[in-house]
Length: 270
Length: 132
Image (cartoon, rainbow over all chains, first blue to last red; front, side, top):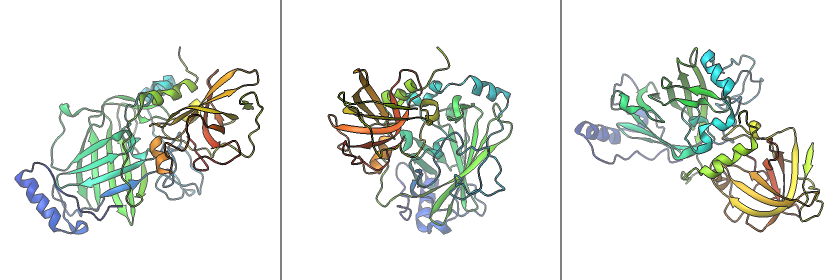
């Protein structure tokens, strides 16, 4: 992992951003104070390429990371083992969501036409991802679907112009963590989960907390969506450092092969 | 139930080539494939789409009635296969291979996933598993 490399500030800078950059470079990362809206936050060093493949955490599916039951001893999405006290994290979906789930069929899923996945699914896809920490933003780059999310640390407020497939992400450092709040998503028929056909709406709000535990990167992903969920749902997962020298590969989703799988699925509709 | 296909009119029994352990990725393989069944085939590779989100290998075989069958073997994403050491030379068009895996659900389709690939002499191709 390139976790020890220092973020390097590039591009046009404002006076405040330049000052922040100088402060950033002058302080050792673990001791650096958060520069925007900080209280007593310490900026964690999250920088590097991280491995989220199935060798690191259980593969995603109908019961991962959203599970109604998990047998004691089974590996959880955060790499720990379940015990007898495991509490279901399967979302409490409302009647509207249940209606969508009832009529859903697999071929309807936008992923078969290379539409990128979004949080909370994107973080749990079994691929590498890279984090770059700059003074005024954090970049989350995913090998899956070539997605790049920008987490703004400059105190900006979302506007109606920010609606988009990945919404807009506003971040802050808190304690030893990076907190990311993302809103302004677009409606997505599988925007919560594409294995169980759970939709998400334009009111989806995803809060992510990233922190380090030794050489692990951990994250708790919490989803709120008043149009489909009765209460927030969350999972915790982890990544490990990527093999030394690994660089993200372009995904370049191919529409032809993406939809080939659909022919194997008995369709519910003609 | 096990469906078998023969290649070039020869009856082939694939020995020691059980489907790979079930691993899911990208989409609901349960919707497309029936894990209660297995399928085995041997044939000539006619096309390799080493792509994302999934790799497909097309295999031309001949069934018991003498009809040509084109199997479509759905594999992991090319990005994943590359990270496991696959290259564009691992499976080449024109090669005879055998495959064991899980068959697709839709009537009349000839898909296979969770596939183990091998040369006719049993030599594994790629890693021991090449599951979807």
